[in-house]
Length: 387
Image (cartoon, rainbow, N blue to C red):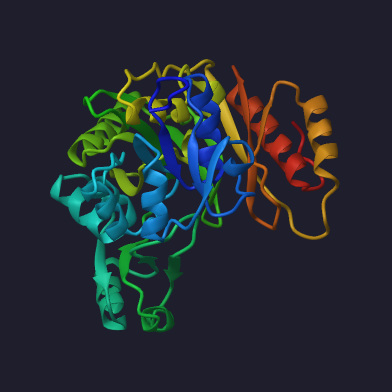
C-alpha cells in the first residue's frame, strides 16, 4: 500500500509502450504505476516515477520487484512460467494468474483448451518432424502455417510453407512447433474484453485489424459492415473464454472471419494493439479498464465516443533517414488537427512501432484516410497519401 495515497501499488512487469499508456491511465486513478524495466530508456521508464531496472527472466529480480507491489500485472507474456508459479506460491497477487497466462504463452495449450471448450479454431497438429507437416498438408492442403509454440508475436515465430522441404531447417532448430491450415479468411477481426476477480465482464465493439507482413498497421472500429449478430457472437465468445480461463484484466481475442464463421487465432492477456483506439474512442480505455480489473474496481463503460474510429500504427521508415521527428510532429499537428498523436519515446529503426495515431468521426473512409496519412507522415514515409 502506498503510504502517501493509501492506495494499492500496481506493478507492471515490462516497460514498453503498453506500460507507458497504462501509466497514463493510472494517473486519474491516483496511481503511479511501478514498472520493471529492462533498461532506463524503455518506453515506460521514461515517464514513470517508480522504475526498477531488472531482468524479467531472473526470479530474484522479479521477487524483489514484487515485494513492493500489492498486485503484479504484465505488458508482455514472456516471463518464464516457473517464475510466475514461484511468485504465486510466495503469496504475490498476479493478474492474470500463472494458470491463465499459460494459454497466452503456449499456443499448443491454448489450442487444446479452446477445443475442449468447443471454441472454433483453425485445424492444427503438433509438428515434431517433416513427416508430421507432410501428413497434415495431405489432409488440409498446401501451403500450411508453421508456428513456434512459445514466444512468437508481430509475425515472428510464424512461417508460411509452400512445400515439405522448407520445414526441415525450422524443425532441425529443435523449437516446439505446431502446424496449422492456412485459413481462407475474409479478414481479421479482434475483440477486446475485460474481467475482474469479482467476475464482472465488459466488451468493446469488435474491430477489423489490417495486417501487413504479419504486423497490424490499422484498426477500424467498429469493424465495417460486420453483421450485428456476428459481432455479438464474438463478444460472447471472448467473455466466455475469459471466464473459462479465469482471466483477470484485459483479454484480446484475435479472430478470422471466414465463410463458415469465426475462428479464434490468438489470445493476449494484456492491453493489446487492437485496443489502442479506446483511449479517445471509448468512455473507458483498455488501459484504465485493465487497471480497474486487476484492482477489482467496478469496470467502466465501453460505449464509443464517436460513430467510427480509425487507428494507424506509426512504423519507422528505413533509409534514407526521414526528416527530424519534431518537424514531422509539427507538420502532422498542423495538417490533421483532429488526429490524436501518440509517440512512445522509442528509438526508430526500420519497421519498428514508434507510435500510433487515432481519428474519430462520422465518415469511416475519411477518418481512415486521415489516420493513415498522419501515420505515414510521422513515420517519415514520402510521398504522403491524401487525407
